[in-house]
Image 1 (spheres, rainbow, N blue to C red):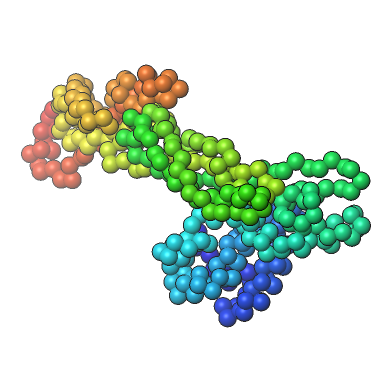
Image 2 (image 1 turned 90 degrees about the vertical axis):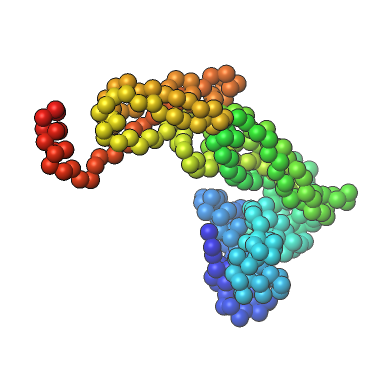
Length: 326
């Protein structure tokens, strides 16, 4: 959804870099999920929007492109923050880079730890990422938290969902360098083997293939199947629905053939030997979508729905014939 990055940070379009930094510091502290445990979902969304806005407005080149062309310009330039899929993990990364060894939550934790300063992602030993605070006196250290799952939706045609296919998905992610603190950008190709009969909403998870950051277990990447609109069929669970326009005359004569090209390019010729009334559905067993749980050995049904086309005008002779024979 398009958003105004200046409004997100609450600054004027002519704001100086220092004003943008000040606004980010205030809002990132206010909306960090660790400060909002009672409404974490809302806080995560706000925190991500704030991080995305700051990633653009704090970068002179991105800000200039955004001012001239908006988010579309950023997408065209391939820039982050509006140009790529900005995630919560990206927002966390910006937060750590912004505060460095400074303790942004010092006012919250200072008294509990004798006023000590705790680094965010690289301060004192044992301070692991956002949730890695360690008590003095030998208390147990928290285990590193896992990054939040990154979701991507991708769309498949009915033909691909019918027959199955293979998709190669390229992802850009951060990986730790040998020092365990700095990161590098890396591209990896993930392979999805689409099974016949998969439905919209099917989720494919690649564990720990997301960003790798200090003190954080890499997030999972999850791809979610979407279904493209088809020109001939609609899908209803495991059934396929085919709508066939039928003139009233043919519907009454009760003897005709419906020809249908299937998703695997076969031609079905379905004889209809009865009067077709409005709302009538003819079922062809086993000609629907493969049922994925059966390994593709079983299929749903093909449902032919008839759209009866009534004449818009009848002459007197036709009206007389109807009155005589019906």
